[in-house]
Length: 232
Image (cartoon, rainbow, N blue to C red; front, side, top):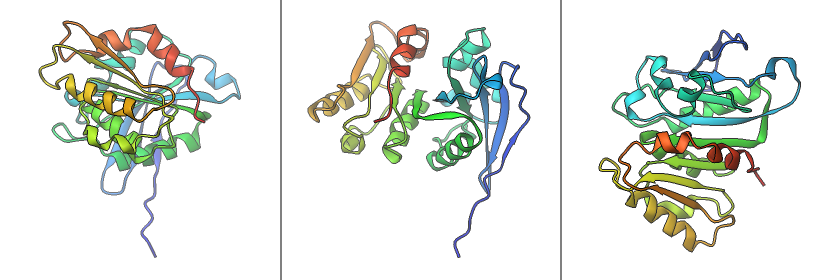
């Protein structure tokens, strides 16, 4: 008999708080996360879109407060309200890559326990989290309604692993010296040769270095575009 991991979510939820904290037991380790619920979630019965946000290398470890430094968590901490659930886990490795298998377990567990519109689950991440977003979309190609990597590297020879109908919008700075913009440009060129529908989008921020996440996640159009996508 195969060993079955017991995935136990430990949460102390107060839906009126800005963020709630939770964790999932992965057997030998655990993954901790922040979750934001939109206004009205606790008084309604409807299903809500879910955005899975993967932070960059500087926010890994065991201090969940670091997850609020960038991206949608930063905006929520500053008072922005969004019409979707935000799930923002923390990579327990400060110098290692994300655990994509663990992320899959987290999503399964969280979606089973919350009112999530399964046709509107979105994936985004920055830097090391951008790499994880690419690879997670490759590992579970039918799970997500849209993919938004920000300044993330990816092996563009794996373009065949990306579904032809997955909406993608990539963001990168032209002066990024940590993760060269060619990482995004080459992948988009490969995907465009696949005749994807819809065509993948690429935004290059002129004169911007590695911090492409501020202009990307501060743009209301990113969220409007993302929320307009639905899984076929």
